[in-house]
Structure formats: C-alpha cells, structure tokens
Length: 169
Image 1 (cartoon, rainbow, N blue to C red):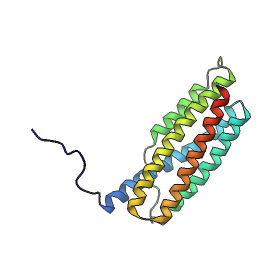
Image 2 (spheres, one colour):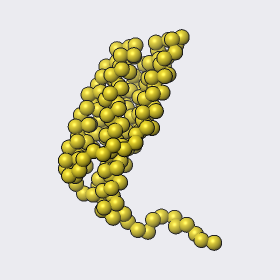
Image 3 (cartoon, rainbow, N blue to C red):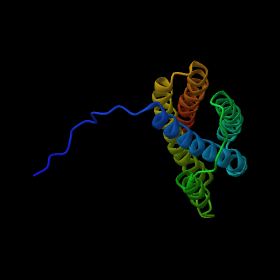
Image 4 (cartoon, one colour):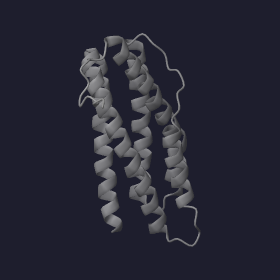
C-alpha cells in the first residue's frame, strides 16, 4: 500500500510561483473588471442611501484596485491575459436575481444585495491574502505593497458592509 505524503517535500520553484501568481492575478483582474461594470447597477437598485453610497464607494475602490493591478503587471513585466472568473460572475448574477422579486420589501431587497456584497468581499479578502503570501515568496516589495493596499481596502469595505447590514436587523 502506497502512502500519500502529508506535506509537500519540494518547494515550488520561482518560475512555478510566478506562473501561479500571474494566473491568479489575471483571475482577480477579470473579477474586478466585472465588479466595476456591474456594481453601479446594484447601487441604482438599492433603496436606502447608506447602501447606495457604500456600493458607490466600492466602485471607486475597485477602480483603484484595478489601477494597482495594472501597476503590478508593469512591475512584473507582463500583461493581462484573460482567465476564467465565472464564479464571481455567477455571484453577481445571483445578486441581481435575488433583488428582482417585486413582492419583496425594499429592506429585503437591500439585505439580499448586502448578502452578496459580503460574500464578494470575503472572496476578495481571501484572494488578496493568498496573493500576498505568494508575493512574499517572489520577493517584489512594490508588488507586495500594492497588494497590501488592495487587501486593506477589501477588509475595510467588508466592515462597512457589515455595519450597514446591522441597520437592517
């Protein structure tokens, strides 16, 4: 009977880490681009001012993050290559579907938007954290700083959305 190793014994090469990093950076960029495109519509469909303003602020943050990601591509001497980000697109589509029931109250519709916004922020935080761990291994301080700024913004945005959610409950 062959035993499976508990932990990898071989460290990833710098080339493997770079490939992983850029591939996932492409996915993050794809997802952020979708957010930049679709979030303004969610803001319009929300009913209460605090949520509208939070989503509009998120749109600005996403724009800043896209700019930072473009800077990361420059620092790594590479370009964006489209990769699949269908998971996030699915979450966004569900957010639109969940607020489409005319029988729901404005508060329920907004709570549905918040549900998906908080899920998206959780994914962003996890993604940026993982990217930070890998960036630490490829040892490019400029890239690390840009990612850290994106990570911090995602955490702050999640806190704001959580505070707004508490107003509904």
